[in-house]
Length: 257
DNA sequence: ATGTCAATGGGGCATTGA
Image 1 (cartoon, rainbow, N blue to C red):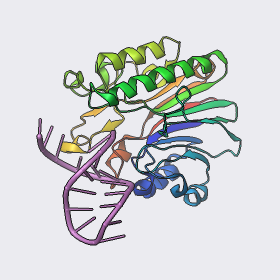
Image 2: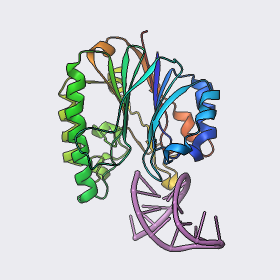
Image 3: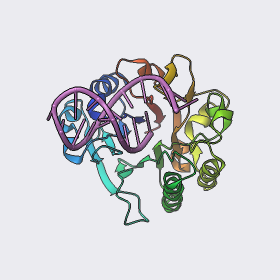
Image 4: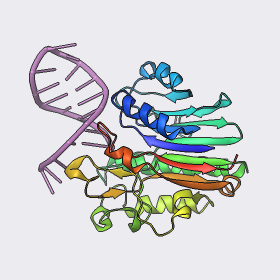
């Protein structure tokens, strides 16, 4: 089973690129973030014509997440991150696809930091970590994937020293990520490529893609049952260079069926 | 502060978020 994650930065603006990439990559499961579309504006017909079932949680203007599946055996488990009834942002959706629990997340960016947005990021991260612990204890195949808005280590950013005051690489953010990892999850891409510079995001500014000035902020965290099935993975780097592309590139893993 | 996208309201372009 090939599982991918892709921050599309607006599914309406990105639809041609998304459909082209789906046809080329043929992933079995896709987690999408930043739909930037209300629930009723999700392009379900086009996604179905491409061969996918879909569940999604939209929101006007911002955020929005979806899970696509070639298999009809997709069952939504929850939408919305538990732990705060007041939180109205669409950043989390979870489904069982065949025997795998797929968690699709769009962790808050948090800039500018410090400030209320950074506080929200850290609080969201705390709630997510609590939920992840619950999933860990279920002792089943789980993948937590999406746009974490976290640079885990200095290897994961072009000129990391420039990012130390940014919400994506501040000590509080890295510490929150490490705390999550201490539950035992495996960072699939880092496991496959322990020392390589791998980026999943390139800013639209100043030709960041052309200069390879990127960040690795889209991640796959695997539970032990799924980790032992991990076969391969990587980044669809070229997609970031397509006309009208997102500022993120799709990332994928292959796990044994 | 800058740079570039996408969505919004309102019908051009400023504002917001990333």
